Length: 33
Image 1: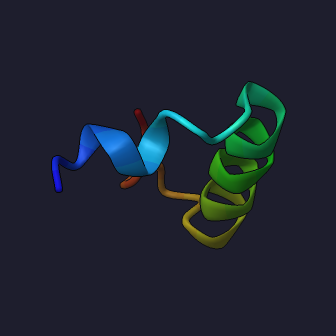
Image 2 (image 1 turned 30 degrees about the vertical axis):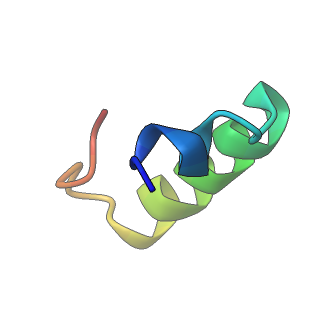
């Protein structure tokens, strides 16, 4: 299974929340996309 298939079904809104959560846990910005 290609990695892309894991991310394609994820809505942008959910991904934004996920990235925001990660950013909150890593204020240094180590997980910046």
